[in-house]
Length: 276
Image (tube, rainbow, N blue to C red; front, side, top):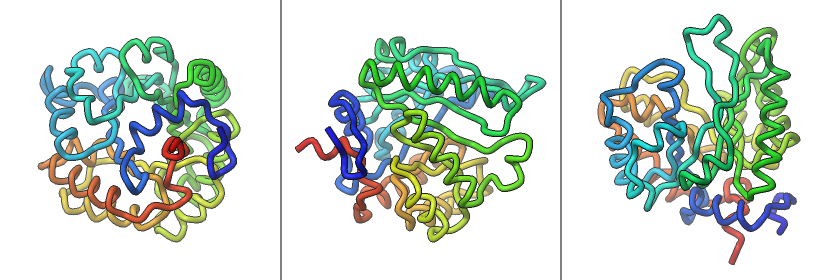
């Protein structure tokens, strides 16, 4: 089946994407919580299950966690939220903190009930070639099994750092995600809705905007997310801005409401919603 951006997707991918981008506006709030591999515990031993419960009540559309962390979360939390299993890992204790390696498979993720998987690629890193190879292998497995692939694309390391949020660089990252077989791209923010729309117009994939480090206040996180939603991106992928907030429910529910009530666009609406 072909979507309105000219991409062919299997019915399996379309059905699974519809669980994440199921709002009337076709836009999603995705909350990544894969950070504990990189930086250490995000809270007490039961924090993931507790946070998942909060996010579900707040209207978040999907949660991103590693395979082992997913096993600490009650399956009931995913009755109203999608599960995205993250397949990349690296720590801030490494000599090369830009390196990411594969630590899971698509089949493992399906056994956990995943609606999608994600990989992290640092363009400009010393191990860029290996990370691109890994992404290509995961994309092939996703195509075989009908599982959507979220590509978290960043310009980090080497010459890439100089213009990592420019329209040209972000558009290049979106092109890499498209060409290597991703179904959704996660990118940094270009700095303004107008500049972000230029990136959107260059990319056939739905784009989620990354949140970055936690802000000083919840109001600042809401203000940033609200500005991003003024562009035609398909949604937000905010982790620390939400789970690190003073009131995660308030930040998540406010941003989810803005996304879900906003007018849909052909770019924001994913192909999964064209099944009818």
